[in-house]
Image 1 (cartoon, rainbow, N blue to C red):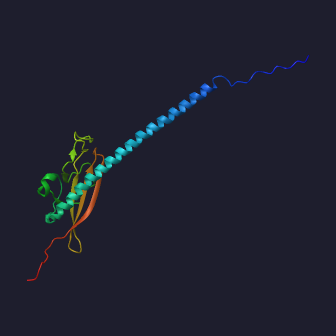
Image 2 (image 1 turned 90 degrees about the vertical axis):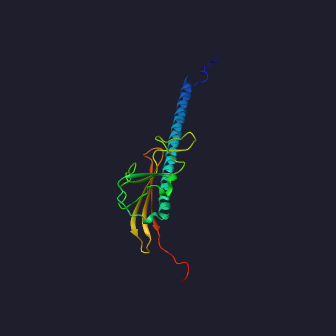
Image 3 (image 1 turned 45 degrees about the horizontal axis):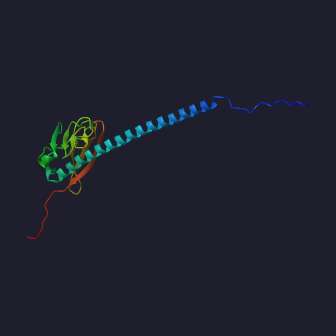
Length: 194
């Protein structure tokens, strides 16, 4: 009689390997989910900061446009003064509001400016902390500010002014500064022969 060597039964993988592999995959998926959530939070912060920067820029542009408009309304002949204080005006007061033309260069912009004027246009809500008011309008940390400086005359006789607008977003640390050189021509023109 022939004896056959008994062959061992089917080979099995060590028990628990599948459990360890599934635990590793679960940890890997959890780490990827956490990384994605952190990335979403970072993107939200970036979007909020960009929106706040845009608000500050728009506020600075409104102050700059008001300063240029004010100069074009015949106020460019006002004598420049030493600007040592900050005046306050509102858009509802219009051109009759206290606006001054400064003879001194603008000091380095700080939060807020200490000379020039503040300008609060209609529908701009100023409230510490930013955010939204009850009507859903954006709150600004500070009113926009304006600094107008006389820089002399151009060769063609135009009076030149340096107009600087400073705007703030929802926080006083979100600040935008815009500046233009604005020329005003004054004089008389003959409309006919005598």
